[in-house]
Image (cartoon, rainbow, N blue to C red):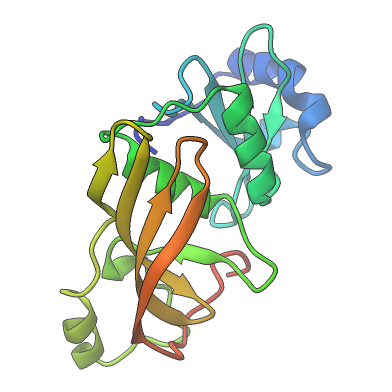
Length: 205
């Protein structure tokens, strides 16, 4: 997401975080001594601290994501795009050509639509197959997939066009995304590259 995240292992630091965040954590995550906690920041939310809370027994599950800042109310993400857009106004969001691709990854990594999650894929190894595919499939897909990249931007309107590979309903698309100054993202073009892939749902694997 543009910055490094570090594990919080010190018992005192975890206790301090728990005192600050406990009322905003869902059931099962309130005792941080039984959770794996990562702390860091996102360049596009200057001044805010980001915390990822994983259940210790299943760190592959998507974490609870929270943001806090001295003097501000804690913000807990809930997979809703509206929550992120509301936070973008509150923070406020600060986008630049250096961080726009990180923001795109952050946005899609923490939202899902009624029809399913749109997952950014930056490299072949991020695909979680139900069964290991034939080597020819990897050879064909590996050069197709690349991390999100900036195509164009308008400094006056603070709008950005980003290219990205997106996995949606087991179909892999090459997409063009338009990001405006408040962080809203629209898919302006998409090309189907591979359909009906036997991929595990990253939220329930």
